[in-house]
Image (cartoon, rainbow, N blue to C red; front, side, top):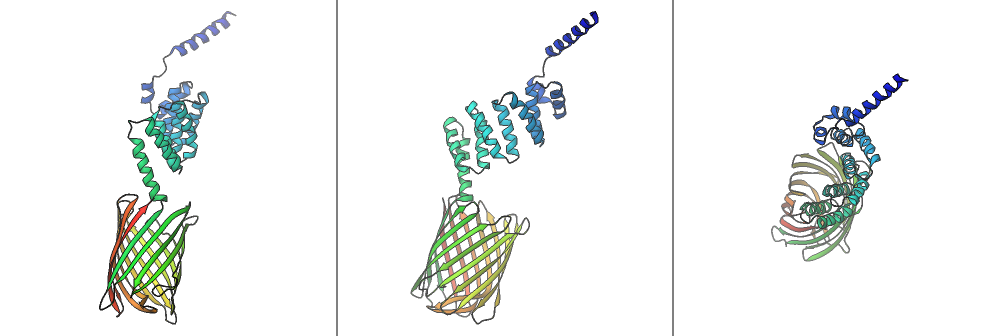
Length: 395
């Protein structure tokens, strides 16, 4: 009996002594490396500061499954601890799982509405999830909640700019003038095009063009749809209609498909069929483009088949330089057969040679200028020298 009592007393003294040992303070925990944290949590499973540090260390090391397990153990103790909720949400964001992070951040923000990092992380999660409207609403509320902080306004401006670039509707207007050699009259044209996102992977466009030549005027309507197929393929379908055409094709249809060719290259096929009063022209093009840093180099081979004439080949080379966000300048050299109206109701297919410099310069995500200037030799008929200026607007 005496031995039993002695054993119980020794065990009680050991438990008391262990409970009186000082736990690792926050500074000691922060100084521990990952193996030390694992060992400490194994020996002191109730040390939540150390377990929280271990969860963060696992996340920083990319060991997210183990980080999740530690955060879950912590949240089982206190489901409303804002630091633990934030930590798990950040680990989910690091794995590109923003929709799972959003409810955690919303719960934490309801507990601690003055905790600014929660607002930052939730805005980032909403943006990553593609919920731009909710992100903007949250940033508006954050600007009110933290009036001295500049980040909500800056983040809101960046988000609105990104939204314009990725999914904004684009309105393009342009005017062009071409001067013909010899006694030919000048050509003038106006165009307006509206292009917008109609579904997650589909854009639609419509436009009106007015062409004046030889004292005559044509008005042309154009529509088009571009759709990104599952995987890497993209397809475009479009058409043009010119009622009472005297200068332009009465109607035309085009079909194009394209895809990336490795990391830096892309290629595609384009078919166009144009119907005039006196001739129809079919053209099939194959093109490829290669990008090197800010530069792009492209080549297009086109087979053109007018009515009752053998098919001929045309070639085009393009050199482009990108700069800023969406801005570029390009130089095009082209040579090949082309159907052209040389007088009202008279269409000839001649060998055309062109050199064109063109580009678009975006002053902001919302406003830009498009431009071009070029020279064309239309067989032995004439030479054209012209320029175009356009205004681009995203909204």
